[in-house]
Length: 146
Image (cartoon, rainbow, N blue to C red; front, top):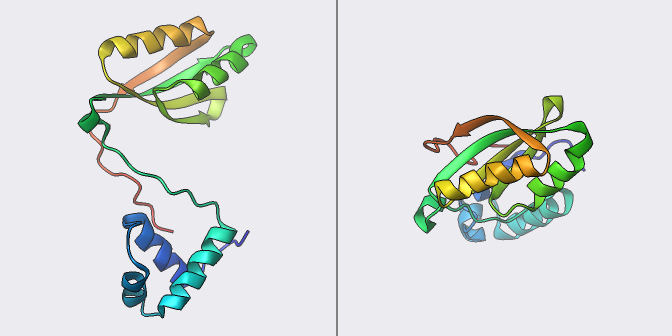
């Protein structure tokens, strides 16, 4: 894999991160290159980098208004069970292993009951919620530029 991108590749990638529905002609015009060059750069990026095309959803608009970040500990003898539970749970939006053998889970719920059921299930599989943060408002999302 390439360690660095060309300036044109970087510009193209940042434009697509802001609006993945841009037409090649719009990208070509903004960057100042030919449409065929846009196609070539896109093919190169898709070949060399792991690219995922995703939709970012405002979960509140579909009835999932409770969002929490949990720091979860898997007790040594149960860590495999906890990890499997977290990986397979339908309410987990993203999951990360963080320092100290802990997990950071971004979890989305429709109701407080769903959240209570989740915390109980974590305990039942041998995990322990060390910290819980209610996400009140999303202030910035997916804006990192390469």
